[in-house]
Length: 481
Ligand SMILES: *Cc1c(COP(=O)(O)O)cnc(C)c1O
Image (tube, rainbow, N blue to C red; front, side, top):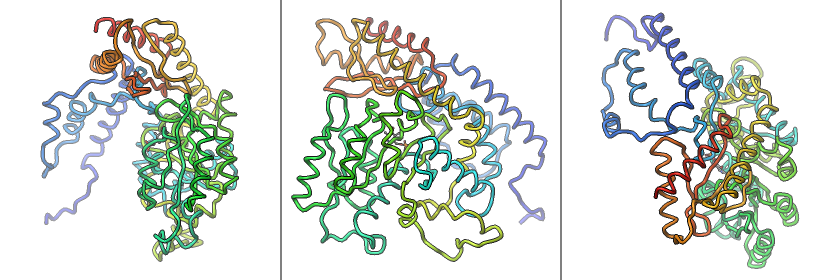
C-alpha cells in the first residue's frame, strides 16, 4: 500500500483535456471525409495478432493508448457509416449523437433507478416514440439494446397474458395444451430464439408460407390456426413483419390484426426495420395497424441513425406489460422523496436492471433535426431503392429477383447462355470483390434458389450518385468474370 490513495482520475487534467480535444478534432475530420475512404478493408494478420496480447498488468500513457486505437482499431471499421455501405439494415450514425454518447458516459447514470434527469429523458423518449407511431398515449414501453430484446420482451408479455395468469409463479405446465405462435417463414431468427428462451420451444412456432411478395399468406395462416384449435393446441399470438430483413416485405398487417381479434390472440409487430417508415406518407397506410397492435418492436439504431445500440418496444396495455416484470425488493423500493423517489423503476417493465443513458442521444438527435427530417430521409432511401430498381430493370445484364419493398433491392448480374450455377458463382464473386476493393458493401441472400446481391439503403449519407456508381461497378466486375 502506497501512502497516496489511488483514483482513476488523471494526475494531469490538462493532459486529458488536450487529448479529448484532439479526439474530437480527429473524429469530426474522420466523419467529414468518410466518403473518400474505402467502405471496408480486411484486417491484416499482424493486426489480428495484435489482439492476442494478454491483459495489461501495468498501465500506459493515454496518448499511447489512443495511438494504438488509431493504428489497430479505427481503420478496420464495419463501414456502415459510409455512403456506399448497403450490406445489412444498419443506421449510419451522426456527429451529434456520437458526442451525446460522450456526454452520457461522462454523467454515467444508471437509467433504471433513482430520481435524476436520465430517468425523465428516458421516459420522455417513450412518449415521443408513441407520438411518432401514433400509438395509444396510455400505452407503455421501454428502451432496450435492440429489437432482439424488444421482441423477446413483447413475447414474454404475450405469453403471460395469453397462457395463464399464474405463469410467473408456476411456469408453463406440461399438462396444458401446447401454446402456438404464428409468423411468416421470412421472420427474423431472433423470434425463434425468443420463443425458445421464454420456454415454449421452437415447436410452438408456426412459420407460415409467404406469397410471391414474401408476405405471409393469410389464408394459410387462418387455416393453420383453425387446424391447431381443432387439434387441441392453443394459439396465443400472431407476429406480423413491418419490413422483413430479407426483402423488406410488409405483411398484410390489417388482415392479420383482424384474424388476431377473431381468435383472441396477441398481435405483435416486428417493426425493427420498417416501423419508422410509418412517418412517410408512402407507408402510413400499410403500417397503420401498428396503432392497434398489442405490441410493436422497432430499432432506433436503424432508420433513426442513433449509434448502437438502441431499440424500443411499446405495449398497448400498460398493466399487462407491468404485470410481467414487476418485482418489489427492499433495496429498489420506491420512495416519495429523495434519490429513490420520482418515476417508477424501469426494472418493473423489463428484465435488465442496469441500463445506460442511451436515451440522451435519441433525445438530442430528435431535438437537432426534428421528426420531419427523419421522415424525409426515410423517403429519400425509399426513393433511392426505386431508382436502383429502375436501373436494374433497364439493364439487360441485371435481373430483379424480388419485388422492391421499403429500401431493399435484391437482384443479380446475368449473361446469356450462362447456367444458374455459374451465375451464382459470378454473383458471389461480385459481392466479395466489391467489398475487398472497398468500392461498395452490399450483402447477399438466396431467393428462389438464386444467389442474389442484396442492397439495403438505410443511410442518410447515400446519394443517387452512389447508387449509379454501384451499378457501374457491378457491371464492370461482372463482365470481367
Ligand atoms: C434488425 C432486425 C431485428 C433484430 O434487431 P436487433 O436490433 O439487431 O437486435 C429483428 N427483426 C428485423 C426485421 C430486423 O430488421
